[in-house]
Each structure stands twice: as C-alpha cells, then as structure tokens.
Amino acid sequence: MKKRYKIIYFEWADATSPTEKSWWTPEGALEWAEKDNYWVEQVGFLLKKTKEYILLAGHTNITFSEGEEIEQLGHLIKIPTAWIRNYKELT
Image (tube, rainbow, N blue to C red; front, side, top):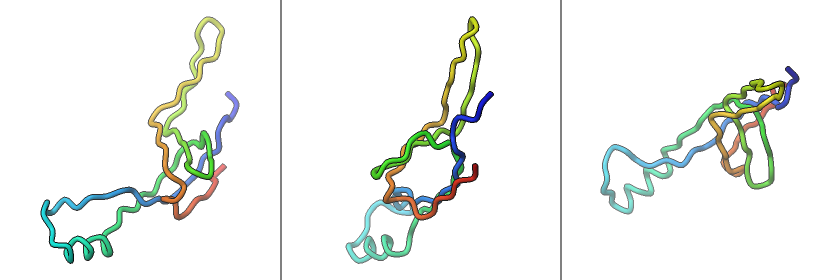
C-alpha cells in the first residue's frame, strides 16, 4: 500500500464554554475569557490545507472489492487556520 497523506502534529485552540456555572456578571465573564483556554494537541492525516482551514482524518483504510481498491477515511475534523498555533509535518 502506498503512502497517501502526510502525517502532521499540531496544536490548536478549540472553542470553549464555562461549565462551572451558567450565569455570570459582565466582569466575571471578561475575567473568565482572559484566563481560560482549551488547547488541543493532535496528530492526523492531512487531507487538505487552505488559507481558511485544514482538513484531517484520524484513520485511513484501504479495502479491496472485486479487484478494486477502495479508500475510506474516518474521524474527519476541519479546523480553522486561525485556531492553529503550532504545526509540524511528521512524514
């Protein structure tokens, strides 16, 4: 089986919401926004990279049916480029 995609490691900031309570004062909301972040570290197969986003698959699979090669991709994720803070190609 030939290698089809680059494997990348990247760190990105996900959207987040406070879970400890549902009502906030304006001051408390601003304080929460300044101190709380949700950083994700991830590895995946790079399917597409544009100025706006990257598209990755967590899994790839090649099966054969009646002599034909069928490619399948799983655990897709599309992340806005502006959310990415670190990016490194592993292969």
